[in-house]
Image 1 (cartoon, helix red, strand yellow):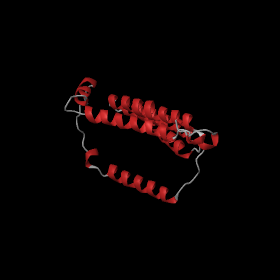
Image 2 (image 1 turned 90 degrees about the horizontal axis):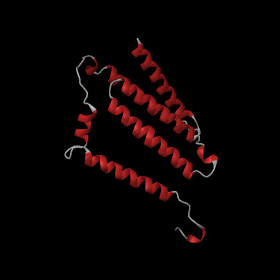
Image 3 (image 1 turned 30 degrees about the horizontal axis):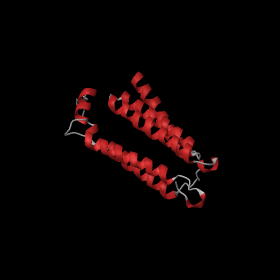
Image 4 (image 1 turned 45 degrees about the vertical axis):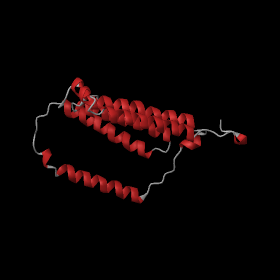
Length: 170
């Protein structure tokens, strides 16, 4: 009973914070709601027994994406009015979201894998780390993604810098 209660509380918080993230007009407030969504989703993942994925969720989404978004907003926004986004609630977006939800609900409820119980022993941190960072494993793609994200961050800062009068960009 405690497991069900914890799951229901966490899932309610995830759904509420995700709806708030989409509905608030202030981009900074939306980022705070995104952080709450990511942290609570990590709690659900931890609760389901995937500790490594939960910690990765916290580090990447809450620690990197959320904080980087807040930092980028603080650096690039010059007036408070720039933080407010328009309320363009498109009918096409609502139809697409509803169709996606319906398709996912259908796929989940008709999936035969949900009907059978399988025994699965998740890898430990040491086993997962050895697989991830082995020379023939995922270390190269992992480092390439880190390099691409670093280049994207540098490009974003360069793109938003203020050009001085007189044509001097230095």
